[in-house]
Length: 57
Length: 204
Image (cartoon, rainbow over all chains, first blue to last red; front, top):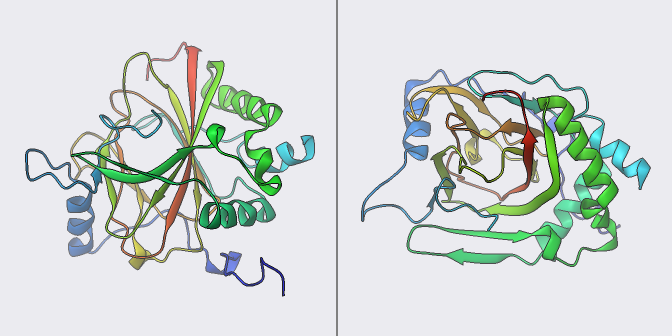
């Protein structure tokens, strides 16, 4: 068994269509909340805002 | 190296740029599977990840140009390959780019996300190509790349699954709002390749 064989990599069969249609209102609301930009002292440090803190610096 | 460049660039060449809500394209696969496998293995095991922590954010990242790449991934920073990629992006967006390119790797872990933003800073990068790399993330894992019609996170234009070896290219502008939803499982690697237009002739 080779190094590559020991790992699971995606295959064509694993791949769903690229674009996701979000029709369930709860799922949609959760997605929106996940990308909302927090501001002020309560801002979540995991919410990386690349407009101001871009990683290619 | 020419053969590698052809394999890497073939899926990006000839893409159709969609103008709205901002100039962008999406391709299903831009890397040959064997190159994808080598890259993921390197990112997973040996890449020089650096945790950048500030009061406002944290994430793992590094510049590929500052890294010591294994022979299996050396093609990634090959000058001819990057020049070819730049020319492909020039053709796609109808712009001329400077020679300089930045190539940064980014690692998103469960619990992390990238809030809505536009990447826009006057005088800085003008175009980006982002390439996804992962072991196959499910919808439950999250990490979706989201494009927006405006700065309102509810004004979603499109949600794209982070399919490994897929790519999104876009022009950076005041309206190029995008985000990555929270990752709930797995590890989401991204190559972020940035370009600098000298003359675009197009008002994005």
